[in-house]
Every structure is written in structure tokens, then in C-alpha cells.
Image (cartoon, rainbow, N blue to C red; front, side, top):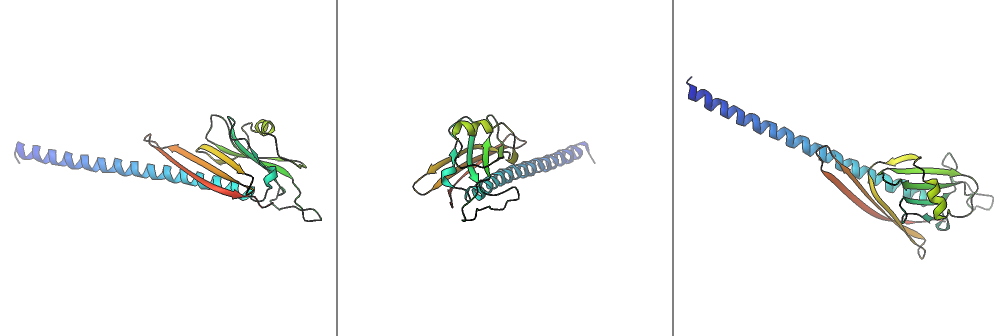
Length: 186
């Protein structure tokens, strides 16, 4: 082998190695993007499912929208006991056992769920709702960017809008949002 052949072979091998490394980086980036996209989608779906499932068994009159405040929060009465069983009195009317609060603490992207037990008859005031939003509760989702809940008294429903956002290791941001109308059964 001559020196020229050795140099040409080395250049070709380096080019092939460069293409191979570029392909590995591209595949890794695509994988990280898809993982981030899936996580954001899962957080969005989990948030909608958790809130709507519990909100539907509540009463429109017990709904408190605190989303115009600095803390994004909604609250409603629930007749489900600690075991998740819907409780009624002897006449079949719901026995309101707890306030269920979903909120995103200020400066956070976490959706938390909190329960406040007692015997209740009316909705929380906006100030009382904010007093319960202390940063504790069960984590529902970790990548929420925004949450709004617009009440509609004519149809006894609300429009729940949620936006989720996450950044992958390469610094790329994936943002997804959704909207759902939730009808109260009681």
C-alpha cells in the first residue's frame, strides 16, 4: 500500500464514522423528542381524566373557579367518601363529604389534588380556595403550563382548558393543549 492509498482509505473511514455518529445523534434526539412528547401527552390526558371524572359527580353550585388568580385552581364538593364510594342520605340526595381542589402552585408546573374533609353545603369562596392552595397534595401531572376553567351556568357545565409543556435534554420544548366541556350531574 502506498501512502496515498492509506490516506484515501483513512479519509473514507473517517467520513463513514462521521455519518455513523451523526445518525446515532439524530436517532437519540428523535427518541428524546418522542419521549418528551409522550410525557406531555400523558400529563395532559391524566389531568383531564382526573379532573373531569370527579367534577362530573359534583354539583354546579359547589364549583369555585380560582383560575383568574395567580394560582390556577378549581374546587368543587364531592359526595365520595375516603374509599371513593358515592354517599347519599335516606332521600337519595348526595351527602357532601369533602372539597376536592385541583391547583397549580404559583411558579410551578405541577398539578396537585387536595381533599378537605368535613360536612359542607356550599362552594368555597375564592379567598378560601386560595388559602387551601399551600403547595401540598397528591401530584397528578408535572408539566402543566396553564389551566383555566370557564363556568357556564346556562348548561351547568364548565370548559376546562389545560396546556402542558416540557423540555427535553436537547433544549427543545414540546407544548400541547386541550379543551373539554365538563357537565355536572347534580
